[in-house]
Image 1 (spheres, rainbow, N blue to C red):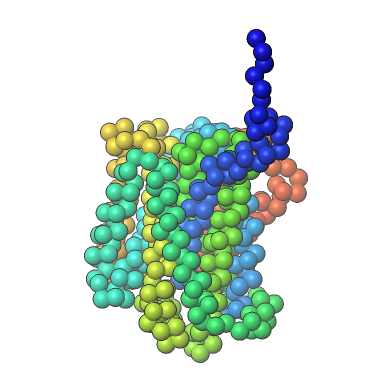
Image 2 (cartoon, rainbow, N blue to C red):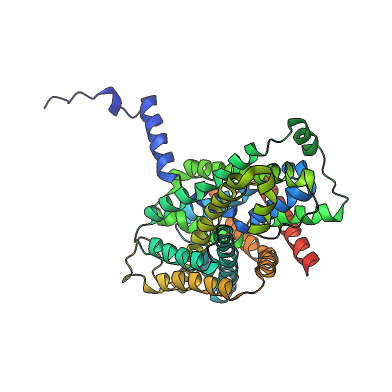
Amino acid sequence: MSERPVGRESLPNDPSFFSWKRLILLFTAIGPGIMVMLADTDAGSIITAAQSGAQWGYRMILPQIVLMPILYLVQEVTVRLGLVTGKGHGELIRERFGLKWAMLSVSTLFLAAVGALVTEFSGIAGVSELFGIPGWISVVFAVILLIVIGLSGSYRRVERIGITIGLFQLFFFVAMVMAHPSVSSVAHGISSMPLQNRHYLFLLAANVGAVIMPWMVFYQQGAVIDKGLGTQHLKAARRDTLFGSIITQLVMVAVVVATAATIGRMNPNQSLNDVQQIAQALTPFLGQVGGKVIFGLGMVGASFIAALVVSIAGAWGIGEVFGFSHSLNNKLSEAKWFYLIYTLAHVGGAILVIASVNLIQLNIDVQVMNAMLLPIVLGFLLVLEAKALPENWRMRGFRKYTVWAFSGLVMSFGLYMALTVL
């Protein structure tokens, strides 16, 4: 039998073959990192960035840039755990440390998830109130939409919708340009960090302590599994995570610059505790379109994608610990408990927002709670990396100690902020 001619495009040693293979792996793996990072820049983070820019001007830009590699390195551990073991964060904790420790971990996750939903729904309510729509109406609409998206029976569909809405955060870059920041002032501010000032240090701690949320670890580890990724996607998944880390911190920089160039220049002592206060303070400088529409769209994107991610993370974590079906690819009849928990998280967060008389205090309480939960979440993450992974997949040497040091730094700043507020 004569040998069939083989075309150049089918030869495995052809460089173009490997280029196409890498490109396919990248497009297959992209999504979980961008999604979780866009969710990291949630309503609470945006308010913190706005307050930072208003009070300290451009001197809060450099910390946002420094946080990029910290965010990437910590979340990369999560990606590796998911791709190599094929198991979620809660499931690994149960296997390695037993059900009691797993329940402790997932209880912190659920508290953080519901608390985060309070923050996101209050952000959505604040935007709607800017346009004269009662907050409860927008919150109810958001809850219904989020539940419908979650029940669609497809992880990839949920991811596409989430990223599309999350990219509304790019409107913050429009607001930054409209603020006409001074290049020389920006350069001077970047070179100055008054660490001796306790008020600056507190806002710095708020920014650092919020860079890793407890639900981020559970979400990204579960997402790479639900998307069907494996170890062959590791490099592409790392790029996805790195790109997301850069985008989310650039969004924070955009908010800092927009408020520093406007409110920080004219009224640096103005209080910015919620969406309405920020929009009203920006309007004299950016106009009605810039202050309300542009800023409002960015806040809606930030709040919506965060609400989607934290609720999925909470439901995934509980499903992993207790062993019931917990995939977004399952039909409702196949994963009733998973979808019930996902739905109840939204309903619970919405009720707290609608019934609350002091959303500002609720948001502060959520930030404090997240900071106090960080040692538990990051502690489990680092121990699992050292114990659950095969030896050839673990960190070594300089990288290992760098990640541990960065994690300790994040935990220290988070606890400092929590103790200061308390």
